[in-house]
Length: 429
Image (cartoon, rainbow, N blue to C red; front, side, top):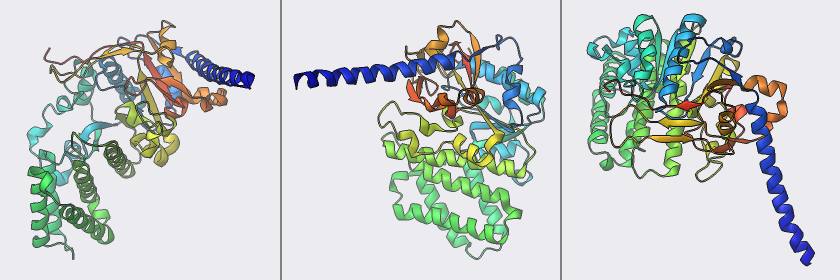
């Protein structure tokens, strides 16, 4: 029996050693696939992506965090390449709302609804990227080229676009002969909305449900009777419903369960807004700018590092929705780094600088040891050549520079590696 007791821990440690050895071998194989590319901050050539981009109509450009200045700079140059060399004509924004961006697009229904000054210097008001020096190439591109835009987000309930969209909805409903709409119903909705904005905690569950239910009733009746003539109105109502539901979770004491529901609502609406645009503009070629997190096509294959490892399977992110709808037309490119610093472009004490230091067991550390400043790994090509690799989990810091194990080859289509990142620099500095 003593011998058996001795053998059991030996077997355990051997199994543990084998497990980590397999991960290390997988990382080595993936890292060896890197294609060294030129200094992308100086050379605006991204021809190494041409094969990956073949027949792709939606390109999602991620970033590890929203403070990666070098990533901002290179993404801006990549957007310029996609527009000028590959014919992409539409730019989709994380953190800009659907309604305001339709105004920027020149939607005729919004003439006089939003103030024209809203169009002035509008890219620089795009938080948190707008104040960054590193997106100057993108700013110049938008100013000097005729592009279309998609606001992926719903608006904040307490905002100017939200106020104006509410006025727009009322004016449109007034012009329609709906059975379920009258001034009394709208007055009640308006009172609840004002209460939600000014005294949110005092809004009862019954009031909240009544508000949502009335908007949903309007949506259904319009869909049933005058769908084609009111596509934009319907999408605005849908965004209003989602914004209201999201507002319920805007609290410092939000639990993990509520945060998960927030992600479900937000990312689903982001996807609906892009899909709505793509259906109406089937020939469009779209570039999406967002976090790696939102651009992920199969996030549930990653083990969440801070708590329940299965947490990523409890919601569906934007990229997963888009990949399900548009399939092979979608290309998702993650960005990552192994060293440097990251900070959003604000000189405020509340905005902290993040040190990037790739852990020893991560893909980024293995890439760092290769002394490669810029490189590209085509995950799709790698999976075709070495299909067994996709079954192996390995560690990476692609999501917020947090070390997590995952089937990363399925999460993104490709990875653009920037060895050393730097903070996003405020334009007023």
